[in-house]
Amino acid sequence: MQDKKINELKEELNKSKKIITQLNNKIKELENALQSKDLLYLNQIQSLQNIINQKDEELNRLKEKLQNNNINNNRNKNNSNIIKGGDKCVTFISNDQNIIYGIPCSGDDKFSEIEEILYREYPEYRGNNSIFLNYGKEIIQSKTINENNIESGKPIILIKPS
Image (cartoon, rainbow, N blue to C red):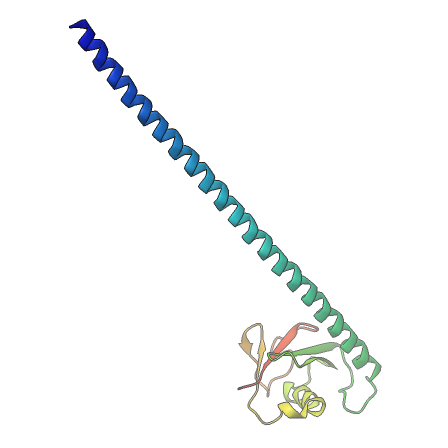
């Protein structure tokens, strides 16, 4: 009787050992899977960081280009195409990225006058019902720079319809 009890306990112990071994194997599998996921996430993070770095470089190039355009525009301030009394600068950037152009002006100038200067420089954009956005809000051409709340140097997005 006691031998039978001992054998049952040994069997139960062996079953428990098998279960422990299976669970340990499962733990190792999960740890390996977690390490793989960690590496995947790390690679994704590095990839996204690379994209951010590229965008930062592109942004810096665009800022430099914009500064150079503004410097050139300031040199041409006495040009008859430029409105006198420039206490502001309206900076246009087109959605097709062909235009990055600053125009000195006064806050009291009508946007349509500034738009006309832009079209003299980029005539291919004239007459195609372009839309101008200031922080996502459409600009009203008949209003002044101040009435449209256009800040000096802040980009005005020119959307050329397809």
